[in-house]
Length: 117
Length: 113
Image (tube, rainbow over all chains, first blue to last red; front, top):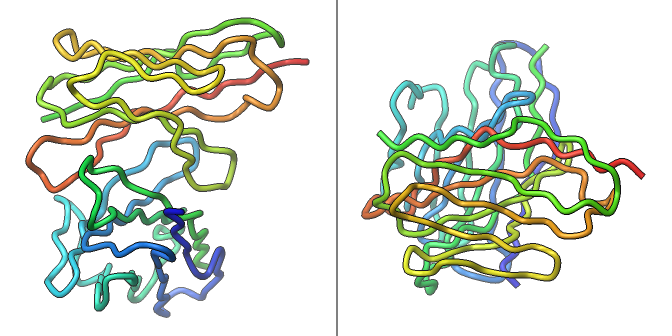
């Protein structure tokens, strides 16, 4: 149980285009999902907290107009990188918290490798 | 502001050795602490979760301890194997902040056959 999927697993796009990444909880409902980015040889940095049916909460320094987050259902959150630039190239990982869980444990997706050329 | 530090940043050991990875955090107001494993280019695998009221958790060859008052946790790996080679991350769940995780920088472990 507690499986989180991400799609796509990797994507290459041209500078100036937009890319959408999906995060799904497959066997549980997730009121809250989190989006992280990770640069090579570095740790995960929380970008935003996504709550079903409401606006995402962004961490300081993260541009909300550039990284659009939508959490339209209890099993799906999407991250759209708008007008992507090479510096947006990174590994993006989502996690989901089981709505019925009581210990705040998060389950992580396998990540999406974004390369902007 | 909560900061999580992991020492060492990298570690190379021969197969069979027992080893300890260290994690420290600056604010003891945590809900729990988790240890994760990350293989290159992959997502995270949860290894152990310790609630703030607990002192340790064990799973197979892994044992994690938590001393909340001193802001420290250790991950003990017994009889290391080449398959244990990966980056190990610790993370704390902040109290009353909706489950936010703050990660350490990780320890890159290499177990030589």
